[in-house]
Image (cartoon, rainbow, N blue to C red; front, top):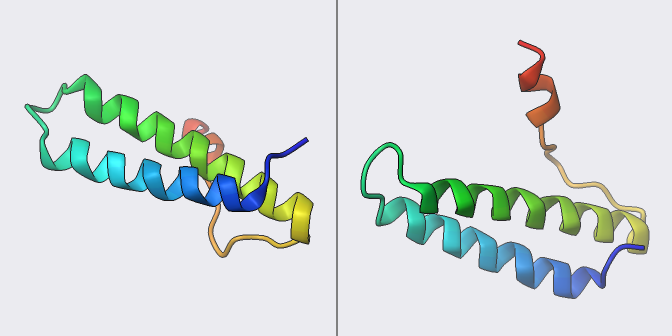
Length: 72
């Protein structure tokens, strides 16, 4: 079962902020904090997408294409 959509939205926006801060403070191309923030943002997006769909049967206007990118 998905979490409350309002809570998932708050987590998603917090993950966006954290990702921005990590990118802005990047210490080089291999900065692990950026990678960590990226994956947290991805997880928060997927949680929000699922919560919104289950609670309201609503889709977002964009999708996570990570699976499609791996095929190339």
